[in-house]
Length: 408
Image (cartoon, rainbow, N blue to C red):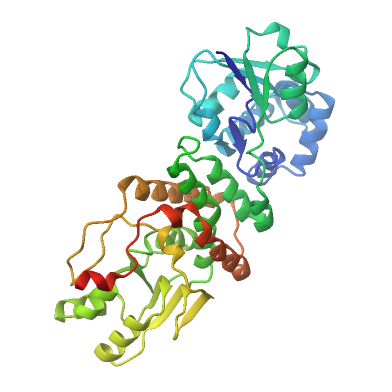
């Protein structure tokens, strides 16, 4: 069976979805005045080929031939930089499939974009001047059993009119949840969601996508509420929060390996460790009441700790949102086991494929951070936390709820 694929918004997508976002970024980085508008005008005058578009732009900006070539290559480079994979489709492409695109970029550039974003198969690429839209291209192509694309007219109606079965791809659109979140945060959620490298219907794909639309935005919004420095992040639960916080703020803070069991067991070695990494710091944790830390600090150091918890029922310190569930912990699985009497640990109860899935989703998101600006919004943070108990991750991910039972 031979499948043909549309390229843009089917196999790859722009980081900010709108193709004009690439021109916006070019205008800023290259100091080209009013570039997006002028680039659109040039394309309207000389559509479909990059060279003819830049011939028009060269007249407008009064570029030399060398300058024209430089800026034309800059657009190619910008597309390579800003295009991101739609993994669920790229991973389904087979040897012998076709890529069919109505596009001004030449075939070799489209191939470079696809290769950069994970395409490994041997394919043929066909680029036309409105050939899909008009329907003229289909008769010139090898036999196709199925065409898949995002544009309902060009990829579905046009293909059907030529006697070709077609499938309308729509997952690249913002989901209703992403639309509700809005702004740069929603754009990040979408592009991470589309990068899920797992098979359709698998538990790991569901967990990755829930990282994209629940945990990652929650950790970003929480990080914007946490001071940049003088922090001790409780581990194991803050393994991903600390990574995101430091990527956003450009700082490095302390890791505080801690648990209710370690606090209860105590001992001089533990006291010295806690003093060295957390005393005088703002101690940050995902969830809880804070009672164990407060009691230990008062008994051992004669002062209350400075606590900041994302969720829970913290009775002393800063709490970002009050809730009675610990769902956020299920999204932040560390490869470390529960800390017992310092420095001993239990084996990790989380499957390695789960911890790797979550960590990879976090790293994928962080790779996009330089392209977005996130704004604090504690109301959105709270609404995301409220959605977490209903997630597949919470229902399926193994978790030790009562650490005290481990002492018995």
